[in-house]
Amino acid sequence: MIEAQNLKERAKGLLRGFKGERYAFGLGVLDKVGEFASEFAKSALVVANHADWFKPVVDPVIESLTKRGIALAGDRIVPDAAPNAPREDVYRLTTYILQFKPDCLVAVGGGSTIDAVKAANVLASLGRYEPEIDPYFGTGQVSAALATTGAKLLPVVAVESAASSGAHLTKYSNVTDPAAGQKKLIVDEAIVPQRAVFDYAVTKSMPKGMTLDGAFDGIAHCLEVFYGVAQEKYDLAREIADVGIELAVANIEKVMADPTSDEGREALGLATDLGGYAIMVGGTNGAHLTSFSLVDITSHGRACAVMNPYYTVFFAPAVERQLRVAGEIYRRHGYITADLDRLSGRDLGVAVAGGMVSLGRKVGFPVTLAEIPGFSDAHIERAMTAAKDPQLDMKLKNMPVPLDASLVEEYMRPILLAAKTGDFGLIKNME
Image (tube, rainbow, N blue to C red):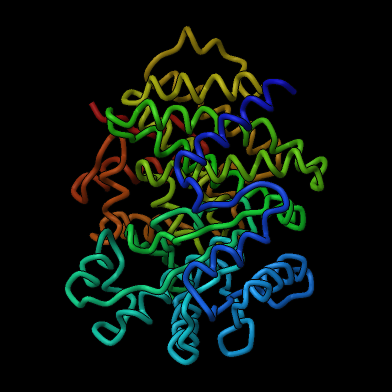
């Protein structure tokens, strides 16, 4: 218990250093929404799920806004986005913003809702100059357009309801084209929500599958950033990864056993928030890139959980320091039995990847692409095409073993084939 409490205190210290007074997190903090919104607004467009099960989250938010004298723009709560923030939901939310002309936006929901609101804010503010979403994909395109046009985005208060993507804290907006089955990214400091609130207690209503998806997404954020971090940020990334990965790995099975545990929910909330901090320190890479091509068959967190072991083996010779940190966490919690001190390079990577696979199997996750219902070789071809897309090349560049489009066929295809079959031996390391 002492060690668990120490981990939480380390996590809280990191998050306070990251966001200061702009972020309210913990248990019982929903009333901060009105206080934050009142810094910007007399009217707020509230985007949230309308389902009865979500009322325990939405009702306190509306009460908090009302108490501060903030009116609902359009006198209604606007329906939220579907999973993976489909582009049609982005355009729909843009229409509400343009019609109701709020002073600020309050996004209440998981990562998909918050990402869709971020993107809709971009289109509503810049649409008179460029009305399609595609030109804003990539890194820094929104800031460039704001600088050129003099336009301004609306303030956003992000109210997170799912321990997962860290969307309430970050510069990322994932938007999906359902027809193509492909997700793309806006990456821009301009879209970071001005204020954020996350009451970890509200995650008790998350289904078990969604809880697992979010926890593995948080691990992926910490792990991938740690793998690829620049030397000058290594110490910070190590602290974030050490605390965030351990909080998740130590508590995933506990929360599955007792989904209503305040202690467990707080631990996973802190872990995934640290994942959000991680992706503001550095970037994700291989597993996230591949996950964008699997949106039609599985959740994002599940796709990352499947892919990270295989990229771990590929990266292993370049990330031995990081593997010893991450591997010790998995060993300490019983997912690795090998003596990691006796291993190095690729062998160390295989052992750590095996620990990740062991955790996935323990909680009933697929550990190969072939185990995902609906998977076909077409997904491998889609992932290969996406890896060569200039709008996603930040993921290739963020790899600890950087690739460019000319190297994707030689090195990425074997990773994907290994992930299909579970055979680490297919993965080819760069010399």
